[in-house]
Amino acid sequence: MKVDILSLFPSMFVGPFSESILKRAVQNEKVEITIHNFRDYTDDSHGKVDDTPFGGGAGMVLMAQPIVDCVERLKTEDTKVILLTPAGIPYKQKIAYDLAKEKHIILICGHYEGFDERITSVVDMEISIGDYVLTGGEIPAMVLVDSIVRLLPGVINERSHLEDSFNENFLLDYPQYTKPRDFRGQLVPDVLVSGDHQKIEKWRYEESVRRTKERRSDLLQ
Image (cartoon, rainbow, N blue to C red; front, side, top):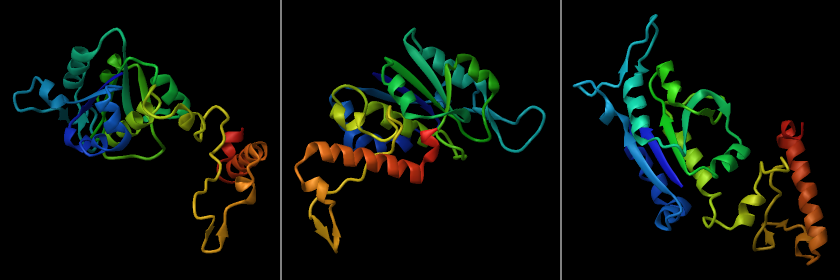
């Protein structure tokens, strides 16, 4: 998979993409990630990429020209272009699985007070990672890349993500324990050390249902 990210602040991605699973995925050539400063594509001699909004209002709005030109330079027939915006559809695990099947993804990081609506003419999908507002789309882009790359074949053990929360059963993950069995008087449930795998699976399912009812009952609708 190839991922291109359009941002005004490329250095924000250095740390997150240089550690752990994402670093190994890049090193093992499971994914190619490139960050583009779309300021490099502006026609303005002073490097300007934003301007005041027509109709008035606070803040500055990203101009269409630099972003559209950058997308058109990078886009191929296999590309899915995604705009990260609070107005997008809520991001779900199902979307991550769908995007993990794509060959090429372009992520556009918004900033300032918004973006010229004409940018959507080159966009296939608008995504929001939650009902809140961030200073820019860089953190949402990191969220998408992390959640998608871990699903690519050979990046992590397949069973690890098949048993994740928010998978096809719509249940939160069950509680997990490790050594020691007794930590400050808190004991690991007996069933988990019983060796009876049928009982363990039953307990895990029941705990997933219980946890989901308590914390995210909306998922059971």
